[in-house]
Amino acid sequence: MIPVVGIIFLVALVVGTPIAFAMGLAGSSWIIFFEGIDPSVVVRRMFGIMGSFPLLAIPLFSMIGILAERCGMLPDLVKLLQMLLGRLKGGMAYINVANSMMMGGVSGTAVSDVASLGRVEIQMMKRAGYPAPYAAALTASTAVISPIIPPSVAFIIYGLAAGGVSIGGLFMAGIVPGIIMGLGLWVMAWFKSRKAGFGTIVDRPRPAVIFAQALRVVPFMLLPVIIVGGIVGGVFTVTESAAVGVVYVIVVGFVLTRTLKVKDIFDSVVYSAIISSVVGMLMGAGAVVSWIITRNQVTQQLADMLVMITSDPTLFMTLVALTLILLGTVMDATALIIMFAPLVVPIARQYGVPEIQFGVVFVMSCMIGMVTPPTGILLFMTAAFAKVPIEQVFKAIMPFVVAAMVLVGLLILFPALTLTVPAALGLG
View 1: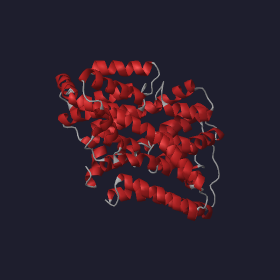
View 2 (view 1 turned 90 degrees about the vertical axis):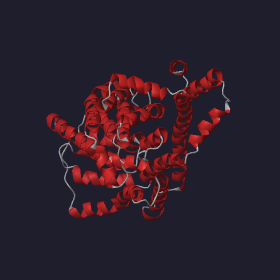
View 3 (view 1 turned 30 degrees about the horizontal axis):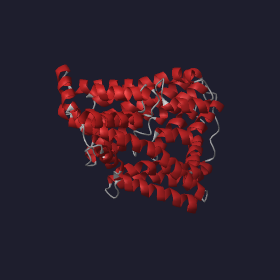
View 4 (view 1 turned 120 degrees about the vertical axis):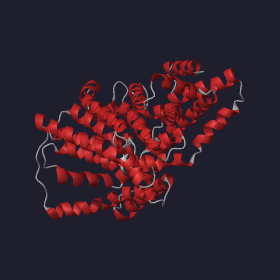
């Protein structure tokens, strides 16, 4: 079954078929021509997952990021960080990391992070004397934090694809890894700035000016508190928290900053619809393939094969992580999650691996593919913003890729990094 579906999928990709349609074609072909089942199964499986209520959170979180930029929340944050960190040697690199950590608590997507702040961050670093390839590489690397720190669209997709995994628990499990990754990138930027003399020292404004700017950032700082706090406190579901976040940003934009326009809302809806339609098609096609895998007991067969190789859960997770990182060099992260989560999550359960720990390791491994050559989408975006050849960014990104892989290893070896916070909040 796997060879036939795989061949159809690969042939479809080779001739230029989009991934979602290639997955759907492979799954539908097997059901219709090999299983001889009523074709309506394809429609029922696709729309069953595409009509899932938690899936609605994806366009809503995308809207939050766009509206926060349009109403001035993100520019105000950048200004405050410049005032606080701009005087330090290497301060612009620190600002880049801090921006992504804060953005991760709002939009939850790496692409939105780069689209909203990437151009500004790269321009700031170039003006401060940083080489353009390094500025592009750091910006792409820091954006990977966004899908790890809650709220995370990647965790929502994983939770839906895997089935039975607490999305709220995954959110909380991403806090410590996200902080570790941010601090690690900060330390790397510190060493690089000291060694190469990057960055310039600027004067810090008077305390009164900093305080006034900090007051402007308060509405933004409250946003992740409302979103994440509402989920943890049981006030909102994940989708409801995203909807509340959208309403909050709109109110701030119209009432407080008075910079938001009706056109901005329309633009955010259109952009979010485009993004979520891609995810929805992938989820629908993935549901068909997942049903085929379950029906043909492929998961159990694969589990039996893996048990013959090793009975060690740590080695199992390591093999899965390395496979995902390798596949991530040629496949989109979302497609990876949707295609492989239904296959390996049941096996992880048989190994006794904690579901939340495995989810964070799985998603983090997939996210590395967004910054690895030759298909890393974030590299192409930041290279375009920096106006440098993509090959130069490839070279500059490798130390950050190694650091991300080390973090994945730590998450595998030390389950407490992912399980402590959810357990303390009753979500683990």
